[in-house]
Image (cartoon, helix red, strand yellow):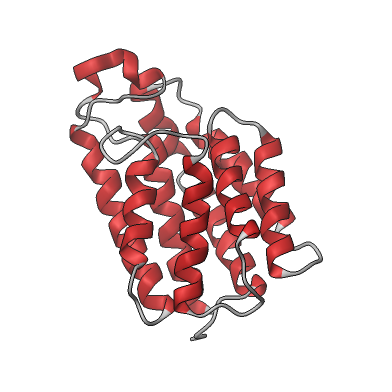
Length: 206
């Protein structure tokens, strides 16, 4: 198992996320249909497909991440494209080199979150994808190896997604449901938890 993160391994992580999203397409659609318009599965599929295409391009690690960000943002599928595009753009703008250690990897993902938060005010408890992403990034802090930080991030994202079951939505179409949004896991949080799990699994196989 590697002790650094580079563009080749990151490409494998994106590829694994693409596989996972496609395997769970129906689930994500069903979750979104309960509180939204049911298209989140398709939106995330297109977003990750765009990332998969861009991540194998030429350039430095930073340039690849920026290219992924542009590709995802340009996909323009609902709110997912712009937000996740901003995530990868934030990573690309703050990637310090070609081989990142655990602390640098944590900072890289943190920069991605900061990029998202420039475009979204959603926080934990608002029943959005941030309920998975923010805990995932927080769980990475202070870890000495990348495998551990990614596994911890995946576990935190999964718990965060599950916690949306009892939340009232404050953003998106689900906001209009009020208390009726309770009893349903947020599709965006679920998709991000699946993606973080795919990242951890792919890194473990690298």
